[in-house]
Each structure stands twice: as C-alpha cells, then as structure tokens.
Image (cartoon, rainbow, N blue to C red; front, side, top):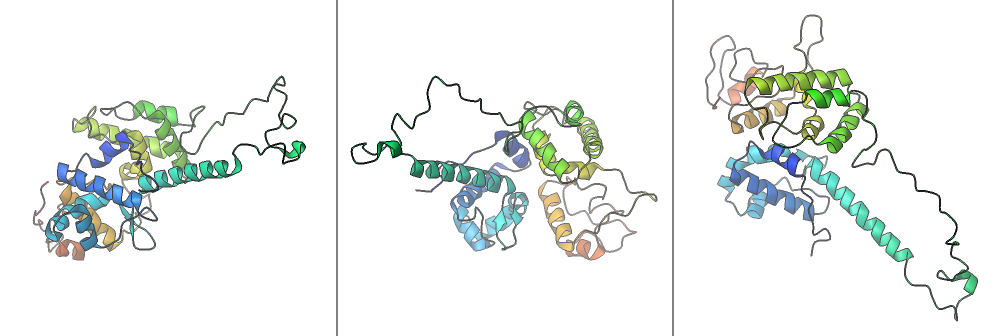
Length: 301
C-alpha cells in the first residue's frame, strides 16, 4: 500500500486548470497525478515510453495527447516532471504524518509505579497540572502556511471586487494566500489589480464571465497571470525580456492544443505578422517565411 493512500483534490483549481482539455486528456492528467503522488520525490520521469505505459496508451496516442496534458507540469533540476500544486500538497501531508509519528513515539501509557520512581512516572498524579488552575489560552495564528486568516492584506479587497466571476464562489482563503505569496515575490498591488481589471474586461468582451472558463482567483494569482495583462511596451517603457527558444516552442504547442488561444500578452500569436516569435521558430512549425508577408495558417484560431 502507498505510504500516502489519499490524494487531496482542490476542485476549483482542478476545473480551472483542465477546462481546455478533452475528457481523454483529463483522464490522462489525473492518472499521471496519481503516479507522481505514489513515486519518490512526487515526480514523473521524462521518458515518453514509460509515461505511455503508465497510461495504457500507444506511443503514437501519447504523442498526440502530450502537448496539452504536460502544459501543467514543469521540469525540475533533475530532469523529471513535477506539478507545483501536487508537490505542495505532498509536502504538507508528509509533514503531518511525520508529526503524528513523532508524537506517537513520545506518547504511550505510563509505566507501572511499582517498577519506576513515582516522581518520574509520566502518568503519576504528582506530574499532573492542577486541574483547577486555568491554562493560558493558546494564541491563534493570524496566518497559517496553507490557509491565511485575519484581516485582508493591502489591496486584496479591491482585487476581489473587480475580479471576474466564474461558475463557483470566490475562493477567499486560497486567493488571499496566493496574494501574499505574490507580494513576497515583489509584485505590487497596483500591478496585480491592473492585470485583474484587464482580464475582467477581456472575459466580459468574449462573454465568458460567470462560466467555468474563467480561472479561479487563486489559480490566476498562482500562475502570475497579471503579467500577461500588463501595459503594452512603449517608447517610454523598457523592452520586454527576451524569451528562450524552448519557451516559444512550448507556447506554440500549447496554442495549437488550445484551439488558437494565445494568453501571453503583450506579444501577438504566431499567425499574426506582427508576432514577436523568432522567424526560425516560425519556420520550424511551418508558420511563415517572411515577416512582412501573410503567414500560413496551420492551427485553428
């Protein structure tokens, strides 16, 4: 039996992450989550043959599903695939189990007073605190690692008020936690709020407000999506940081798998003549030859 037989599932985040997938892709993703949960290090091997065997698929079928399924996974320094939210939950559950085991090793029934010094017996009346004495109240933490509580941090209330509605209730506790994480990484409240306003306007324009296609706020914050909706670079603003070729390739694969959805603003999609995708990357995917001429449409827009 697995040392961690129960896999927690954050329903809102899972729906938001897999809304673009087919039923077959969702099934493959769930099965990979289970295999990673049971494996040492909570990761998957970067081996297509092994992954196909885990899923019970042929190599050809796995090659067709992989571009969409593996967009939710990242390569770690050891070359294996990991899933941020799964790793976080795995560490949390493992920590709880270790704490319970440590408490169990320190507990147990007291030894007989006949064979031990009564003053040292763990269950003796002498060692007990007088029950009539009032114990000091245990302080309640204002913020725990998994579910922050207490007053809302600066700017969070405004973010919550302007964030577009989806098909589920606003996830206040996990969203507050993700907000604090973003602030610790150096993000400014006004930047996040500006991005949320732009995202809300976009979802309103395409008629997705109130549906399952709107990402939950905690998922949106965790993926730093406000950076996709920042102000367009101008002559007064510095040029955007260069994007690695491998990142462009992964984005184009994801763009095709999602039916032409391109969220990486302010850059334009590969089928736009003004795109920032390097010409040699476009050539690899058959998306154009000359930048100032119309490009070949190979993906569904």
